[in-house]
Amino acid sequence: MRKLVALCLCGLLLSGVASLAAAEKEYNLYDYNPMELQMRWVYALRTSQAQGAVTGDAEVIGDEEVDGVRMKRFRWPSGWVDFYEQTEEGLKRHKDICCQNIRRGVYEPPAIQYPRTMKMGEVYERTALRYNYNGQEDKPAQTLTETLRLSLLGEEDITVPAGTFKGCLKMMSDSRLFDKGNEVQRKIGLGWIAPGVGLVKKFSVDLVGGAVTHMEEAELKEFLKPEPAKETKE
Image (cartoon, rainbow, N blue to C red; front, side, top):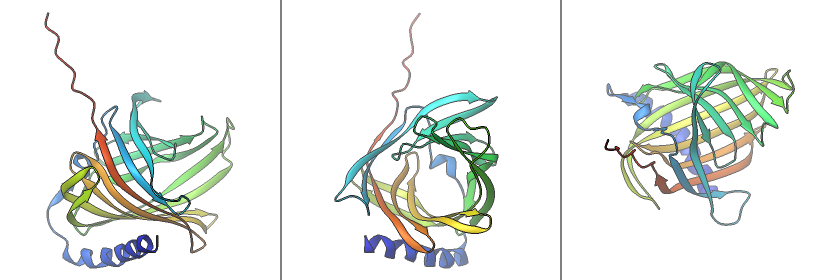
């Protein structure tokens, strides 16, 4: 896991280097993060809490209208389900739920998880309000300020158990949560996303008070797409 920390820290340093060589080409991140209904990603996970590798899967489990807005429901290996809206501006995160709605977070207004397009070397930053609820309570138990910083570092070919993926975008993410101005959580991630597939490899660390509380490495083992609908002959 020391290698994981070192790689994440190297990513932080590289983000500054990459920004000096920004290219004019604009990448449509929707092409690298497909979200069709029933798409599923199976990952080999290594964490600081588990001995050896475990398997976790993510899946687009819903494509529905919620409160008049068309959203995708995306389930992560952790069990959390995010509600996303694909817009011209970028992918907007409306809310997330866990444990049969025992816990949920709501973004008002919805927060952009990543912009629709980015150029190489570009850095995207945003700030949003997150309201945490417990159970069916109408009032939030906690109001947090969330910041996000994304850096597009380069293109690389990546080999993982699922195979070799050409032209993956290498991205750095740095998200922080603040409660009344005090940082309560930080997550730093270095990931590679493949065109038409999505996330194929990731390193991440969680920090509280500057101390590492969780580390994770994920590599894609299997990618499943829904079968195209068959035409019926009349």
